[in-house]
Length: 300
Image (tube, rainbow, N blue to C red; front, side, top):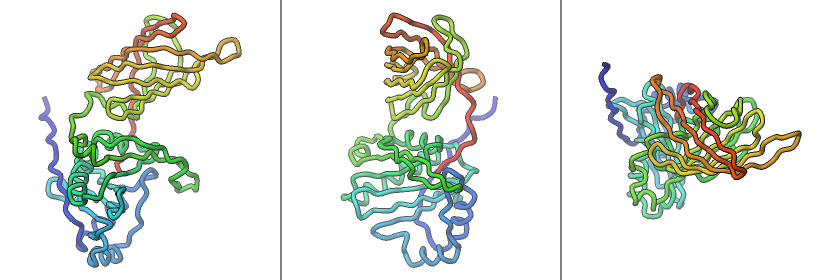
């Protein structure tokens, strides 16, 4: 049996001019289509850091130290307003180990303590940057908004961004350091594996959004259009209500109902969902859905 993976030691320190070369390098390596590079030049960034431009009343630059070595950076702007905004970049070598979550927690602790005027600590994530969305969720930030066409992509087209925030009230209540849910469903896709009762609903695809205990699922299938469910996740049990359109004889009829879905982990590490539902017309069913395999992680 392999030894348990140790949690890394994460701490923040203020960026200094000598950090410029590795900051530029990490900014380049960590940049993706979902989190673009800042495009810094080493000499110019070193001069800004030497002048104190990133340690002022309005903005701060932080080095992310993981086990004593620099593996990322965090930028905080708008400190002279009630709404500060932050962004982080984490190097590929330490992703998937809880570093991003701990960085957000430490940033919140420092800046809420340092500024009595700060009311909200905010950030954004590309609509397809699911790992960063999961980092926000794990650090207690609430999903507040969808900014349509807010992110200009390399091909000139625009994508949406999700907006997140941690308020001073959240921070004072310790929401950012609260124990997380047993299951983090945000951004995960599930497909039908088995139907033991009721209609088979072939091709059903279900994707989750999660904010703490609140869960939204959006789904569609061969005969189902514009499906959405919403509920509360307690431990491994999701109780939900749903509504969708269902094609019948060339027409789309609205169907409403409720259900209970229990999550458990398979031997291969993926989640499966044991779902029992009924609609307001008296129909009911039981089925098993299985998590689709995820893509490579991206944070920041």
